[in-house]
Length: 128
Image (cartoon, rainbow, N blue to C red):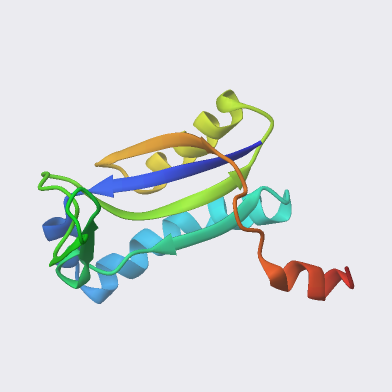
């Protein structure tokens, strides 16, 4: 089963990290990432650009309204996410705990996901 692990943290804190601080966090996350990749459980993981680069399309208006900025004003912003292929929620929670140990603070939201639009590059790589 696929789960998205959504990474929330105070964007102002993260954007204030020095290059060395950011590299240290990534170094702590590295072993978790490597283990998951070796187990075939790690799908795409992405770090989002700051909310100042975000654009929101509000669907409630006709025509839809396009505005600068994030969807919601909150203390913690969605900074990135992982997609993991696991047996169940318990396994996804174990992974989130490992990620949290490497990068404390903020929150991880776990949601089961359905594969809506498979990567067409997969068929090309497998000859299908």
